[in-house]
Length: 478
Image (tube, rainbow, N blue to C red; front, top):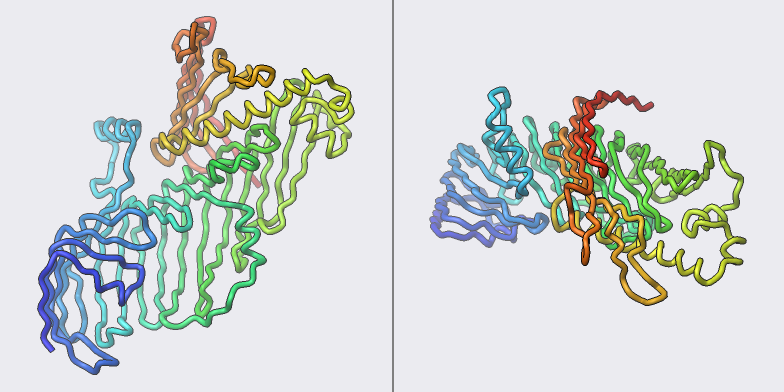
C-alpha cells in the first residue's frame, strides 16, 4: 500500500498517542505500508514538517518551531533533523539582565535557549510496537506541566529514550528554574486513598534520571490557602527512578532551603532551615524538616514542622530574652496570634479584643496581597511590612495603614543571581506613595556554589544617610 499525504494539520495521531492533541504546520509524507491489518509496518518512505506546532494534552502551551525530517529505509525511520522551541516568557527585568549580560565579553550566553535537538532512529517493523532509539539535547527548554502544577526550565546534554515494549528514559537533567505548587492536605490524603489496581500493559516506562537543582526552585502552596501559606526556594540533587511493571516513580535525594516564608496562625514566619528528604518511598512520601521563626517584641516564636507528608507534626517554642518559656500549647498560640495568654484574653475589654481582630485581619489581607502580586507580576518575592492596622472594626472600614509601610520586590535574574528592591511609602496626604526620600534599598545576592554566597546592598535610610555593604557568607548544613 502506497500512501502520500500533504497538508497543514495532523490530528489522527491522538488515536496512536493519546498525549498528542494535534500537529499543525505544512508537512509531507510518503509511506510504503506492508504487513497485516493487525501488524502493519512501514517499509520505506519519508516524512518532513517545517515550522510546525505540537500541542500536547499535558502541557499548557504548544511547542513551537517544530522541524522534522526523516527517511524510512528497511522499516527504520532515520531522523535527519528534529528541532523544537519552548521558551519561557521573560519579564522586563530578565530581558534587561540578559541584554546587559550579552554585552560582557567574558560571558557565554547560549544562542539556542529554549531549543530541543534530537537525533536517532525508530524501528517501524511493527507500528503497534515501534522501537525507539533517540538522543535528545535540551537547552533551557520550558515545560508547563499544568496538570501537576509544575513549571520548569530544563537543560540536558544526554537524555536518551530507548526501547520497544519497555521505554527506558535516562540522563542528567539540570533545572535552573522551577515552580511547584502543592497541596499538602491533598498529598496526605492520596497516600491513604485506595485506588483501583490496574495491571500495567506494554509499553512500560522505566526512568533513570539524575536531577541537579542549583537554586531558584520554588515550592509553594496555593495563594488562596491563607491558613498554611508558604513559599520556599530550594536547591539540591535528586535521583528519579521507575522500574517496570510499576507505574509509580520513586525519588532519592534531598532539597535544602535557600530562603522562604511560612504563614500560619495569622503570622508570617521566616524560614530559618528547611529540608525535604526523599527516601525511595512508593508512593512518594518525603520527610520534611522545617524550622521557621517569628520575632514579636522581645519574644521569639520558633515553629518546627517535621515528619513525613502523610504524618506531619507541628511544634512551637517561645523564647523571651533567650530563655524558653514554659507555656501550654493554648497559651503559645494565644500569645502568638492574640498577643496575650488565654487568661489575659478572657479578662480583656472589648477594645483590646477589637485590636486583636484588626491585627489578624491585617495579616490575612497582606498575605493575600503578597501572593496575588507574586502570581500576576512574575516576581519571586513580594513582601509588605505594615506597622499600622489596615482594618478599623469599630467603624467597619479600611484604614490608610500603608502610610508607614515598606514593600520589597525580589527577582531571580538567573538561578544564582537574586536582586531585591525595598522601598517605603511616604507619609503624603491624602494617600501615601512610594518615595525614594522615605528610605530605599537595593540588594544583590550571588550564589557561588552550595556553600558560598556573595551579597551586597546600597541603602538610603529615612534620615538621609547612605549605607553600602559587601559580604561573603559561608554555610554548611549537616
